[in-house]
Length: 455
Ligand code: TTP
Ligand code: MG
Image (cartoon, rainbow, N blue to C red; front, side, top):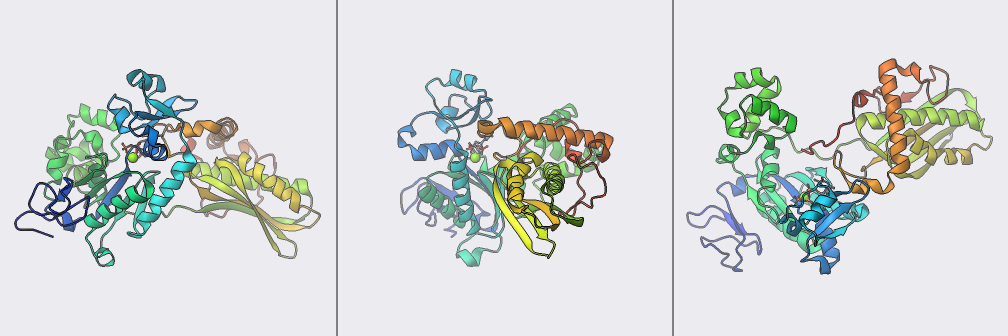
């Protein structure tokens, strides 16, 4: 793809190889991408532009040239704003009244999470066609490792990604920004550098120089608190970190110092790991003697739901479907499933779905085993984000979660026996979480985390 002495490149509109000119010789378009290392880089980060707003604009062309804010709900904050509204200073997480003071002419729409998830799934399918190594980070972004896919695609990763971006525009009606580099940290940084509809490349040759002027807060995992601490130690920009000897950084900030030292140089060894999260969780009990009594069975179901709920909370996962499992005295397996009212972390929600299933099965047959499981699904919103989408049905679900989290804290502090187990009043039932991990409530010590950075 190299032409004469200019670095390899292509036109992002028509995808033909770029000549030496400032515009594409084939289509006249200005979106030429050139980079000396273009054909050697394979780690990408893709992030949709103004995701919720872009989808709403797609679905209602009358909104196209209007400033658009998605948000509202009980908390009254901005989920996202289109780029037009951003020109007025509107930002994600800003209180709605402030956003409207900055941009009174903005159109405001509530989020439609189901629709956005659908678009997210379709985008994911397009990504899965490029490489098996796709690691989603949130509803609208993912890492892709395209190493070794040249033969499959008959093109280097950069061109494959440009094709992908065009395809998303044509098939999904929204735009993405792409960052291409040789590791995750730099790819994510790059995708943010040229938004919207961007394509940025960070090669090995310039990584340190690109990083140098940035504030330390741009480093993966450096949140506001760490940034302030580093600032007090004299590390304000990444250049400050680049200049510091490794041992000084380690002395100053502890173990994390070595990681910072490496990231400041653009070194990041984390792999792109495809979605390998847990798909289900369950807990079941083989009964000491076979039971037919519906009330006794319900008590065991409660205990099992309790275990599953605690494990969901401990792992920060959400159940979306609940399955009741029974084994009759003659070893026949009965399973009955029901979709949960909402993605949940509570035993109460799991029971609400499964107690009626049990009532239908407890018809006098004797059972030797009872248990409950959940299929893990997406929470209503990416963790840590203040999503008004969550507010639509906050009441019951949120109350139940708070209550069970409070119980977790009591258990953590005073031990399991302090609460009994969902009114079972006996120990040693032989409950075991089949997930194979002891249930702990470590994550519930102290206040729930809020405002977590997504990177
Ligand atoms: P982002 O990718 O952070 O934002 P964006 O896609 O709207 O805009 P861009 O990437 O071009 O800067 O988040 C993706 C979606 O997640 C966003 O459309 C709405 C939602 N979101 C919230 O609901 N609250 C928030 O605070 C943030 C940051 C995002
Ligand atoms: Mg985005």
